[in-house]
Structures are given as structure tokens and as C-alpha cells.
Image 1 (spheres, rainbow, N blue to C red):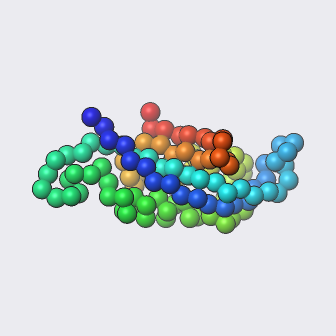
Image 2: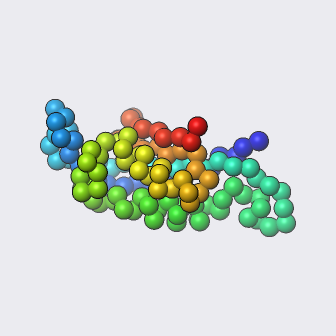
Image 3: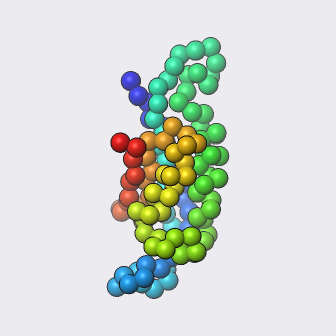
Length: 118
């Protein structure tokens, strides 16, 4: 049986998508990011053995990556700062730090990109 946990973050950023009819002008977003881990919970004598990962540790490890995007012009970091490319960058930067299952990157409240380990 696998157990899945998630943490959520909110960031603000600006970007421009060269050549896009609407997003080709500089503009900003407030975005929500959900990072999910998945793993086995082993029963043991310590609390660490009874968790996939401790939430505070997970939040700190994730924020160390995600904060690099907060209040930035993402064109300084990406050739094409699409939500797909940003979500993939987050995933790639976290996959060796936590038992990562997925990264969901929301534009507003009703659109998102999801990158999974599946």
C-alpha cells in the first residue's frame, strides 16, 4: 500500500511568452504549486519510521527550490517560461531530494500542469 502526502505553496512571478498572441506581453501570475510525495509507511519505534516524510522537512526542501521562482521574471531563468517547462524544472530539482510523486502548477484557479513520476 502506498501513501501520498502533499504540500502547497503560492508564488508570484512575471513572464513573457515570445510569439504568443495574448501572453507575448509582459504579465504576472499568482500561482499555486502542489508537491506530492509517495511511499511506504513502515511501522517502527520512531515517528520517522511511521511517515513517508516529515511535513516540515518536506516543506523546507521544496521551498528551497520553489523560492527561486518567487517574485522573479521567469524569462531570466527559462527560454520559454511555459507552465509545462516551469513544472518540469521544479520536478527535476526535487526528484532526488524527496520521494517525489508529482508537481501540480496552477495558473489561476482553474488551469494546471501536472508532472508525475508515473
